[in-house]
Structure formats: C-alpha cells, structure tokens
Length: 110
Image 1: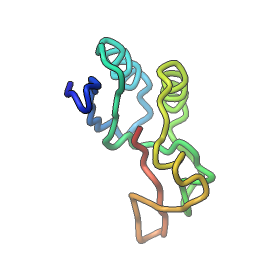
Image 2 (image 1 turned 90 degrees about the vertical axis):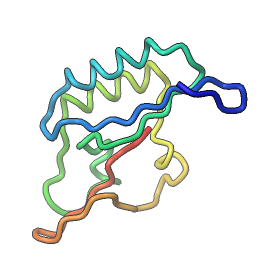
Image 3 (image 1 turned 45 degrees about the horizontal axis):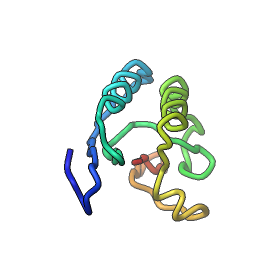
Image 4 (image 1 turned 60 degrees about the vertical axis):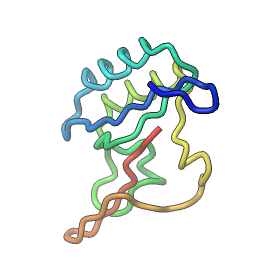
C-alpha cells in the first residue's frame, strides 16, 4: 500500500493464467478485500477481454467466460471500473496484436 494526497492506495499488478481459471481471480479479489484503503488500483495482464464487441477485432469472438463472471461480480461489489474504457467509451485501441491470422485485443486494467 502507498499514500497519495493523504489517501491510502492498494496497488496490484496481476498476471493471470492463459486458461479460464475463475478460482485464480476469486483468490486475488478475496485478498484485495483485506486491504484497508480508500482506493484499489489493479493493473497487469488478465488474459481475457471484458467486452468482446468493443475490445476485440478479428479471430474468434470469445473470452474466458467463467473468469469474466468472477471479475464482473467482484467489480460490481468493489465498485471497480475499467478506467480506460470509461474515459474512452467508443475508442478502439489494442494492447495485443497477432499477425497471422490478424487479430487484436485490449487486455484490461482496473
């Protein structure tokens, strides 16, 4: 934890597994709840896509559904948001690219 402008912040950098592992995300979020702070900032690579329609182009239109359910549930309970998507609701920017077959995706951070 760190303090910025007299606010206690928890900073978490997460690298999630490449497979659909909802227990991983449950464990992460349960530990984050233990932090006694005003704000939680989560960054890293979740290896999934929150909104396939807005944040993925090319390839199969899918994501890790079981993990996404856990993330959405905890996001609602902890009032977490995808800050970039809130500030850029209609923009298309991708953090991951593949040449063959051509595919791009925005991997999230809260």
